[in-house]
Amino acid sequence: MDRFLIEGGHALQGTVKAGGSKNACLPILVASLLTDDSFVLHRVPNLRDVRTTLKILTALGKKVSFSDGTVHITADGNLKNSLPYELVKQMRASFWVAGPLLARFREAVIPLPGGCALGARPVDIHLKGFERLGAVCQNESGNVILSAKKLEPAKITLRFPSVGATQNLMMCAALIPGETVLENVAKEPEIDDVAAVLNKMGAEVASDDKGRLIIRGRHTLHGTEHTVVADRIESGSYMIAAAACRADVTVTDCVPEHNSILLEYLQEAGVPLDIGGNFVHVKPYCGSLKPMRIRTAPYPGFATDLQPQWMALMALAAGASEIDETIFENRFMAAPELVRMGADIVTEKTIAHINGVKELTGAHVMASDLRGGFSLLIAGLCAKGTTEIERIYHIDRGYENPEGKLNALGARITRYNPDKDEF
Ligand code: UD1
Image 1 (cartoon, helix red, strand yellow):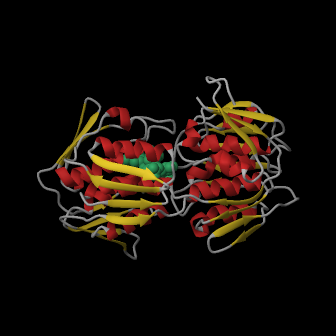
Image 2 (cartoon, rainbow, N blue to C red):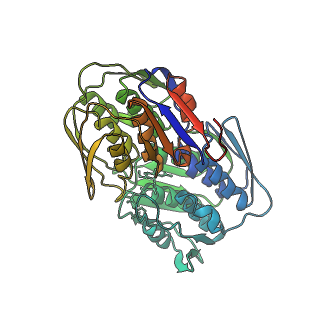
Image 3 (tube, helix red, strand yellow):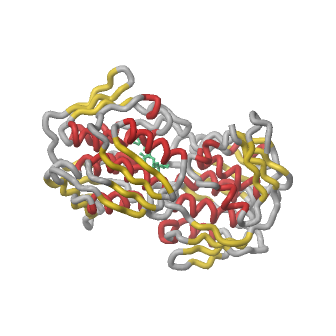
């Protein structure tokens, strides 16, 4: 398995270009199941989760090609309505195929995604929504069996604004003629991108003044071509990395307003920024970094997907910081590894107490999840000495060529595989 070796302490300077959003790509690729027409998606990052989604579409009967950031999807005979566990277990977002398959076949068999590193992560909100649309959901031998004599539009209030459930229900409702109203929905920019695609396919999806999603579904939807929105989590990760290293780095091709809270917090912490229409320039600074108390929350709150990276930054602040993780119950897995690098972090249920230290030191650490893995990369970049990160396949799930992007800024990161005994 690949590892990163990072020589810390090298000055970073230059520009880094944001890629297309992983979390928008996954549901949008799945939306191709709503039609037999051709479906073209641009600015698709070459990531493990994207490749897993393409395998899922192929397993379901689609013909898929992916090159130079563009995915072409066409029908290849009959579409299937069940998915093997082998694919679902690789990625929780596989469950997002349930909505489109239910809408097309009135029946679908999807293995339950099960637990994952971030906690239990159930799918009850998705299933409650499908039931409101007329489906019966049964759990048999680890599979969810969805069936419906007829699907009807409905008014559905989500118990929590789940991102995945909002997307799954939007996709299902887009193929149910009539008006479905979703209340207490997620408001992440990725939801808007899915809505834009469904609109291009012939459905009508819009938010009303109460923040509800109104979906006017159609009997059939047609193919489309779309360019994915910038990845605010990837962009934010590089901004935090630059801030932690006191670097002079501009993240380009991003949407700064999608990172509003992060930008506000960075400035409050003392990191000078120049914010443009589609770039953020993180400027070098000499003073100390101010410790902060933050909590994660659904968008537009502080993204849970940037929390571990923020933790690496606050590990270097001048004083005591706190993070309250309100979205996932088990999202401090990077903390003990950061402690191995000299950070002073104590976690207590959903709260992390961070006492800033003057410097971090290189260590041999292990990534346990995607964003936590990137926080170790940030720590390694500013640490004294060499850091070795194992299990970087977690990082590869969500960051395209991170060592290439960071090395172009002046970092010294080597990817190597000890099993192959070569550099
Ligand atoms: C998506 C993102 C992920 C991000 C998360 C929260 C993708 C592919 N993944 O994940 O990167 O961290 O949003 O911003 O877009 N929950 C339930 N029942 C459900 C669904 C969710 O209890 O049916 C809970 C989850 O356990 C979690 C919380 O709701 O505690 C948020 O989950 P959700 O918004 O659904 O996250 P995902 O869509 O899985």
